[in-house]
Length: 134
Image: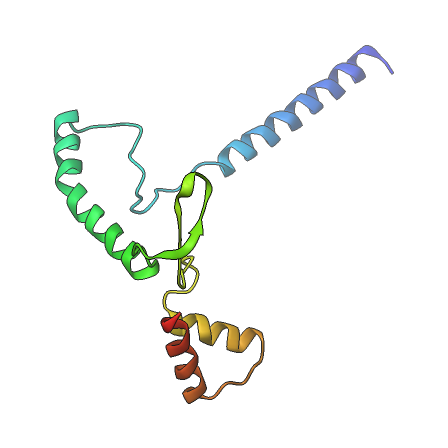
């Protein structure tokens, strides 16, 4: 190949690379986002305003979180008799939810479906009553 042909090939390759990069960059342009919980990086309001807004919102957030924990988990202190962990810390007794299923009734229904036990409504109620008595 002669010098002008090599030079033209490099020019074409550079042009193709430039077009690919420009197209890729254009494809990455983000559209305006909707409402988000993330704070913007470009903060336009004073820090004191942000701080006062967050301090005012904190009790409501804590209340909602506490209600969710109370709804999902049994946090009562019911130590099992005669059972302790290391350093004689009592082990909690009774049924404890792990948060996947909101109520004991939901848990019974879940395992009724998964294990295909085909319990009747009365049998489910009896099982829930039995589990609550533990």
